[in-house]
Every structure is written in C-alpha cells, then in structure tokens.
Length: 444
Image: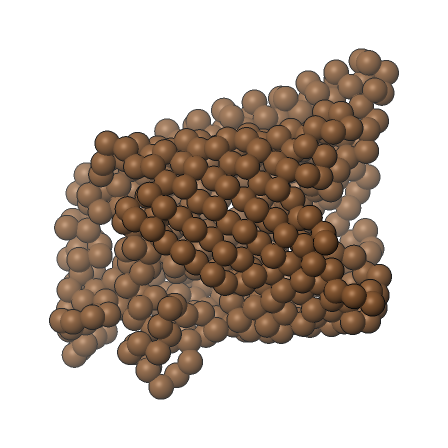
C-alpha cells in the first residue's frame, strides 16, 4: 500500500486524517530505504560536481597558457537571478527601445527520451514544443509580452495521467502587461512566469495573477528587493468540488532577496513564504498520481483530496563565477519546507551546477547537472517541474552544444527513484537517456 491509498470519510476529517496517517506512517518506517538511494545518488552527484568544477579550472589554465586566446566574447547564456539560463527554456528576446511595431518571434524544441523503468522493460517518448512570442514596447516603462506555445507528447507521457499514449497541450508560458523602470520597481499582471522569483522545485507552471516588486536599485552592486505574487492555480476544470467550492483557488507568496556583485562573482540569497489554498479536487487527483499524499473522500469521480495543506518556506541561493571572458560557472541551491505536513513528508532540496564555455566564436559548451530530493508533500506536485514531482530522489545531467545564436543540441541522462519503498510499485524507479534539438528565438 502506498501513501496514496489513505482512505477516510469527510466526517470527522481532522481526527480521521491524523489517525489514519499515524497508522500508515508506522508502515513506512519499517525497512524504509529513504537514505539508501539518497546517499548513493548524492555521492554520484558530488563526484560529477567536483569534476565539473575541476574542468572549469583546467579550461581557465589552458586559456591562460595560450596567452589569452580565449578572449572571445561570451554569448548571452548567463543565468538570471534564479539560475534559469537561456538554454534551459525557450525564451523571447527583450529590448527596452520603444518600437513602432511589435516584435514577433518563434522557437522550437524537439526531444526524445527512452526510459528503463521498474514498471516496464522500456518506455519511449517524444516531445515537440513550438513557442511563439509577441513583444510590444508601449513606452520606456510599459510593455506587453505574450508567449503562447503548442506542445505534443507521444509514447510515454510523464504527466498527471502517467500513461502511454498522446497528449497535446496549448497554453501560455507567459502573457502579461508590465510596468517597470528596470531598476526600482516592477508591476506585472497576466499569466506570469514563476521562475523569475521561485525555483522549479516549488512551482514551475505559469499562474494567472499579479506580481509586485520593489528594489533598492537593481543596477547597484548590492541590492535588496521585496516581491509578492498573487495567483490562481487550477486544472483543466477548476470548478470541481473541493473543501471550499465557493472560494477561488489561490497561490500567494512574498519574499526578500539580497543580490550582490564583487569583481567576477555575482550571487544572491532569497527567502520566501508560500501558500496554496482551496485547490480543486482535480488538482489533488493529478498531484497524488505524481507523488502527493491523498485520501478518498467518497466514491465517484474526483473523489481524491489532499491529506495536507501547503504553506511553508522556500530558501534559494545562487553564485555565478565569471572565471574568464569565455567561461562561467554557476551554482544554484533551493530548499523547501511545508509547515502543514509532518516530518518525513514536508521537505525538499535541489542542487544545480552549470557551466558555459565559449569554445570559439561559434560554439558554446553548456553542461548542466542537477540533484534533487523531495519528500511527498513538500509542494504541490502538479505545479512544480515535471522532472521533479514529489516523493522522488534523483539527478539529471545535460550536455548541450550551442551554435551561434541559432540552435542548441545535445543529450540528457538521469535517474529518478521513489524515496519510499512502498511507493515503488506506483511511481516506479526510472533511468532515462534522451536527445534534444532546440532552435533559439528567430525574430520576424
């Protein structure tokens, strides 16, 4: 029995949930292999991280030995404040000059993966994503950005349905009206890109809402900023019955960030509180399939609900080291703690290493290595990055090459394991390898 199979009724919900959870948890603690895969995968991650850092020093030494031949200007692959490099997601280029006509662009990403799973001998899948961009600069402080996309998955679809088949998704990566002086304040309303201030471990799905931020001066070497999100999370049918079916689902977060730069080092540290409320049962049904803890409220459709609420703390930090003009090393850390779930179910963290090496005027090498460990109820599994989910421990290695500003291609490999033995039969343990081809934004 997995933690999804917690069954109770709506009557006496509080005591019933607690008693049922206590009984179920005692079963988890019998022979719980939580630390075994974590220790092995973390050891592998540290070994690869040290190799990446060692490669950085070797490349710097090689460049110095040839008399500064590596003074080629680095392309725009440096990570933003949350560590999301331009090669990690399709993006539309931005410029602050007022235009008479809107800028229209397009990008495409094609990926294929092969999985070796404990639930099947092999599962293959393909993923094609097309992103269209519209950027209209209304004034020096006002702009409209819209990035609609179409995504087609076939074969093994790692989504809420978690079945072999086909899936077509149409939506917005972001689409909002922004008012900002690019230094002291920003206001954005619409479909928001959550990665600007949050790690993908917490939330990756764009949410409709409002963003407010104020800073002491982003153009200064040292800056302190405050930010807040208010959004509406949901699913394909956000009107499904929930605990409070007369209330609108909501996501709220607020935090503070400190950012600084000294010579070739740039870094930031951030703390934020987050909260989900009134999530519909369709979200709970999807999320328990991906790792969250749920229980059956009644017989019938959408009868699964979350056992715990989601309100907690996110801590993130990052460091960028410009080792030389053509070489940058980055480190990203993220930690989650859900105050409404018990110990053993409420924490998660991720560690990311990334390298950007401009090999010559045309080619750039972009390795990226991420390790993650996330307990079942650290966050809502339906809204964080699909490579994470919850109740998982694993790593992901990407080895990409970028040609000019035209395209990126490479490969990926990784491993994901259920952290609780009783979940292996439901979530499975996966190893995967894949190839990817991505065109960068072409402006029309």
